Image (cartoon, rainbow, N blue to C red):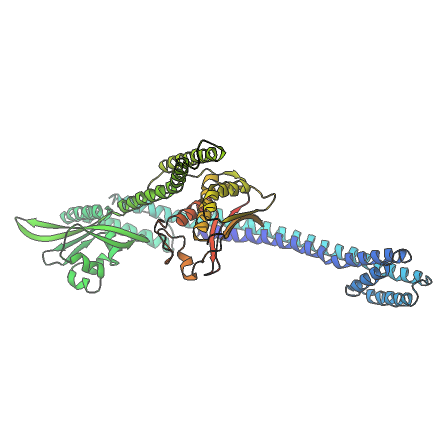
Length: 557
């Protein structure tokens, strides 16, 4: 009931906040209504200036005609239509002989009348709208205050009326649970709580009598053993010598989807006819058989152990134990992902180092000229980057999760694009592919890890170069879209079929037909993890035969 009252309070609070919001918006909209009157004043002012410039400006007549037309379409007040028609008639008379200024005064009078009507309307509408808004705000504020006080009254008073007897009953139940059967509850009430207290006292008396008997001691030992079994994280199923079910613990109930009370004493093979897991457990085979079972809202792994219960060499029953080994599987998966990530991260800089080293040994290069010096710098930069990436991956806080620590800071999108383009420039030149960078000016900074974000952009560019035909172009762009900054890499390759797009960011997935034997299928998956870990959004658009666009979006810092 406390939760319900709190919910009621939240509803009232929302009602007040939303009500004030919409009343303020009503006030704003009331002021927006005045826009038509303001436009009429603007048209009249322009027509008045055009009338004054009629003899000196050859475009004045057209300006007058244009603003008159707009005024004819913006008639909103009583009397404004007649004044506009009078102005139109006077203007038509002027068109007969524009050099004749005899009716200038009539035109001015018509314009002044329109202005007066709209000015009075502005004052009148503004006063009405403001008065209505103020009254609504006041009424809603009083209503909100009253309802808030009522809600607080319910919250602080009503729960105590209900919770006091419940607290006393809970205290008695805890005492009985602690084997204090002398505990009694006295409630001088004629309602359901009084009846419940009397029933509790009767129960405590019976338990006190029962505790004194030998059977109670046996039951206590049995309960203790059952409690121990139920507290175990492994699933345990007990069978007698005839394979009838003796007991299930709580974990086994969840795994089998059965209640102990409904199957105790039942023949286990009969249960297996309609329960796949029971049928698997009863099958003869290695005791250490690993099973994959959907439990705790995820796929979990268990080892099956069958323990024989012997009495003087005679089999009197069996205990089937399902040991939960899911944490070990998760650790193993994290280790695999870690190794795959490290391998993929190291591949690009190592390849660049090997290429630069090979070119340095080429006789055509000769002594260290400017080109060789650039290659040496490339080797140095890639070596540094390799060390940074390796160190960061090895310093993961928890290998089990596979999460890589991010260094989030305000980052310049232009610098990220420049860094990515420079990293793949040599690779693009080898295929004679031009890279066009289109970065909008004055882009806001983003909150991101520069190294990881550049890595993602480099991965997009590397894939675009890999799958683009020679002597084609790749475009990388960064621009602002409302309050977000978008990065997009477009290529002119063969594209991706629509049916493969939902899986493009899955681990180890490769689009059939790409024949990419050197790829691991991890690059786009890692890119997705990097971007989403920073609060960004990654996406792909592609059409077979029309190229692909890979991009990600960050909120402006």
